Length: 99
Image (cartoon, rainbow, N blue to C red; front, side, top):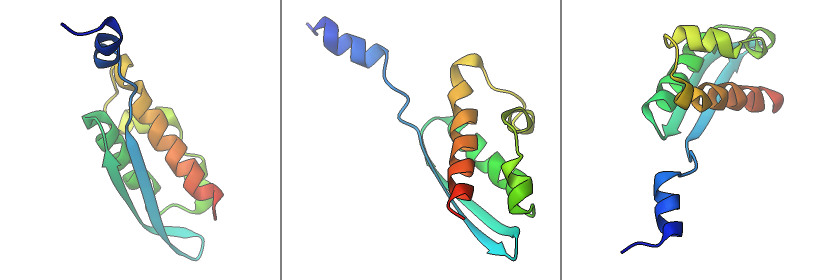
């Protein structure tokens, strides 16, 4: 009924999660940070957790937030959801690079 190619795309999709971060600085401190996410539950949870980890820190301190720290904050992730932690860390680093 369905082609092998169609079934392959259905059974093995690319992640497709999207995370957008925005922040407000007061001096060199992150006074507020927000996220907007589209994707799986772990991606949304990691987006929320990264904002909690970064808020109140200096920009330099926030640059030092590790993937391991994020994973502890969310209580760990299954191996299949590991991309969610990387997405959040990468989004934070990309945002901080723009400053």
